[in-house]
Image (cartoon, rainbow, N blue to C red; front, side):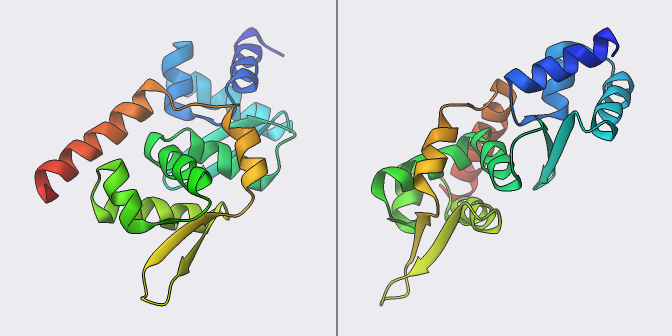
Length: 170
């Protein structure tokens, strides 16, 4: 295995769920070179990929599809905050999430829909028709929570979205 390929695999091993752009930036490798080596690692079953809402996240083998989706979402700051708040409350309303996160209702709705589609959360409605979010496998999500935190670029994208939300919906 080439040095570049070893470097990529080692980085993915220590940063599960890293997405392509972050990998390229962190390792300071050319985009084409990174794609070539990632493709070879995927073909050799040395890496797995999980595509989620416009980003491909990479993992060393051993994570099941659900774990990959959870980790990918935990790398996104706002999704992570929704997950943490839902874990803390066991069940939280969309209205409470909007207020606690200080983001637009549409932002919360987008993240909750993503969590539901990924099988990480369930959306329930009370007698008044208000949506509530509950994490489906809380103990497993808590265990994965300690493995990953959002990267700086992910935080910046989320914070920009919040800034736009505040100025547009504020």
